Length: 196
Image (cartoon, rainbow, N blue to C red):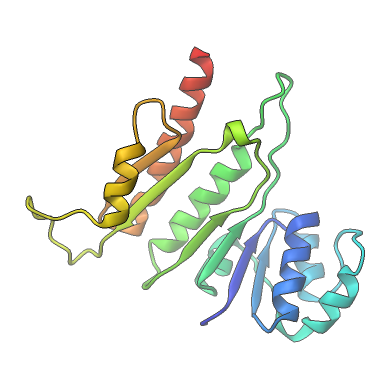
């Protein structure tokens, strides 16, 4: 599983990313709510029209896999890219409903997975919509201690984090606790935009 990548969302960006990673020697597990897109990737066929996509898919043919669920994709990889639609709403703001669903599905999968897993949000958002979550995840065996010294990165983010900052920080004991952090972060964003 080392070096395996999962991609949630196989539109124009996700399909191309899957093809490039596979052509470079990585196993790629692709999932999309549109099962025909995932099936096409699994057959090394282009689910969208994009220059040179068929040739990259052909080069990575043996490393492309269609996942039946986000959970299957996550459990088969060590890195997950979220590349789902963020459609414009009537008021011009981006909808993050698909991002939240993907994050929830990934969190559910990570509840059962051991070891390190990196999740990267790649979906398109405007700079003013960018919010960041910094999480430190311990194992279930880690006992919280009152005198625990924060990591250097935690201390750095704590300096810039404030009530108006686009950062959510949380220490969680287990991966299953990750999704609520993202939910709170998007709520913080919504509250701040409503006040503006």
